[in-house]
Amino acid sequence: MPDEINVIPPLWIDGYAFGRAIMRGGEEPWKTPDDLGFFLRDLSQLLSLELVEVPVLPAILAWAEMQGVALASLDPRGMENLLADPGFRAVLGRGLDTASGALGGRPLALSLPGPGALAALFMDEDDIDEDVLDDLSLSLADLLRFLYRSGISVFRFVESDPRALAFFDPLTNVARHYEAASVLVVQGAASAEDASGFDLVYGAGGEGKVLDAVIWEGASNPPLTDNKSFTEVPADMVPETVLARLRQLGGQAA
Image (cartoon, rainbow, N blue to C red):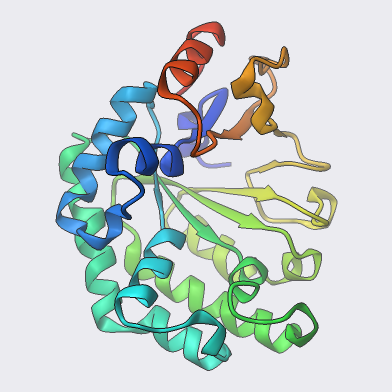
């Protein structure tokens, strides 16, 4: 297990959607990559984040929108071409560079959808087969190689399709090559019992726990210091409520 696993806090908070709503009025920060780093810096200060997450999925959605591409119109080759598009990669690279500069050396986590989660963006479930999952996994791995920067300590993946868990080897191999921690959040029908090659798995069957959104409404299930937890701040939460809940959680948010 790489040393980078130690930068993962007891409670990992994904506050990106929340920050986009309250700090940008819902406007996607990836549409102006020169400012992405300042957005992430301000968000990390607001939520007292020590590990700052840079999500790639919103960048995919923003690029498709700016290019006038309806995701539902794509086939697997079309998505592979989108991920490899030099213009798209230039936007990603610029955003990551500004994040590295604005955050002053803080450890970064890069989050991406798994191959099944990516396929679900543009394909019907019945049309997703092993060939699709394999090809998208290889495309995501190639994108990871392009995106890696020295400040990135963790790769975090999200997957809800149980079939896709057998196709993560290219992704976890990239993580090992760069000595970054490889983390998975399983959702839906996916289970950690079917996942391998990860340093930490949150969700059903995993050593880490996914906390429901109700935790931000005061539910009495704070994370335990010996059991890492993951939670996403709902985008529609009132900032004062979120900050008050963070104080109740004893400053474990990082």
